[in-house]
Length: 336
Ligand code: P6P
Picture (cartoon, rainbow, N blue to C red):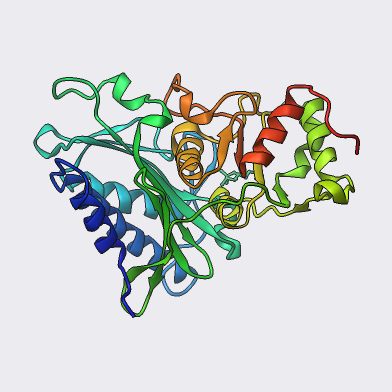
């Protein structure tokens, strides 16, 4: 049986892109190497050297830095920083962007959440790495603010690696979404989920209901609406919440439904970061036929004010996100 590797898939796509120089393919190959290294470390965490637990540091997000966080950040940054394909690397773990020395620069900008789901690392629950690739848009050699604060619709590619029961690499280069599963015995990602399409409507909602008291009224009404019993509109929905965006998003992408991280009294802009979480997931879901908004605005249209800007995120099946937007706008909905 013909099995396509992720490297072959990217090379095939690369050839089909007019004027392709091979630089993008080279960058993707480096991302794959870094993903395999992090996957190995995540899957053997707790065995042998002391890689679990906290470093005692606090990152720019004010979160405790886990040893695996630091390992993943260093692995991706080092490998991609030396690839000659990027001019800047921005990490959720780092306050400032890393500007690649001029002699090693390439035309792409790499954005990443090197290890998403830190709170789940030590309890063996799914975690992941998220990345976005943009082109440098400013003239000349200098990397400018405009290069680092592009709207999500300007992404060249976006993807994530989910370190779960198996390690999967999900990628879009703007021509559909494909999933690849790591065969650890060969150390290769093989195409396992070609042309992923999210169902137009699902039957699952995913949100941290522990925050209910600090949501605004419309958010409370939305969740109550999804929980109400109405077989004619396939309600109540099931609640699934893992607490790792990559895992909750991956389930939503494959099964349909909606993932929500709204703003609340403690996080008036929402918790998730635009550049490192919301924009890549929005780019992926739209290329799988889904929808992603802040509840009022398309995620991919936002031009971030600053690198670590947070936004509310409603992402998933088109009809579920549209229903959320309708209820959040205050519009009446079908009686429960
Ligand atoms: P809460 C993980 O720390 C993360 O950044 C996302 O991966 C996840 O969706 C969210 O935070 C979980 O947040 O407040 O429910 O623990």
